[in-house]
Image 1 (tube, rainbow, N blue to C red):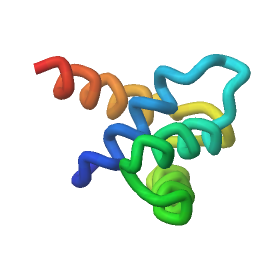
Image 2: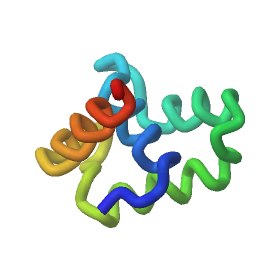
Image 3: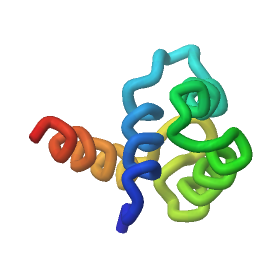
Image 4: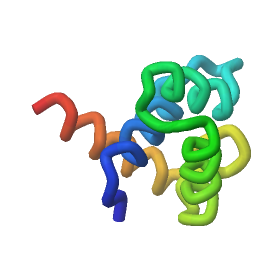
Length: 76
């Protein structure tokens, strides 16, 4: 489902974020690392919501599963 590495990194960033941190703050952090532009990050965030992986500021169960897959992938 998650094709692009940027999407997986964003999903993992949201999974690892602090409880009081907002998703857009994760996008700003990743934009600062030049992973993507702010506009692109917002688009990717919106796509995660459309895909049913993100509900408000928290991941759905499916989103958590995908984030855990990404985490395992990046450990290798």
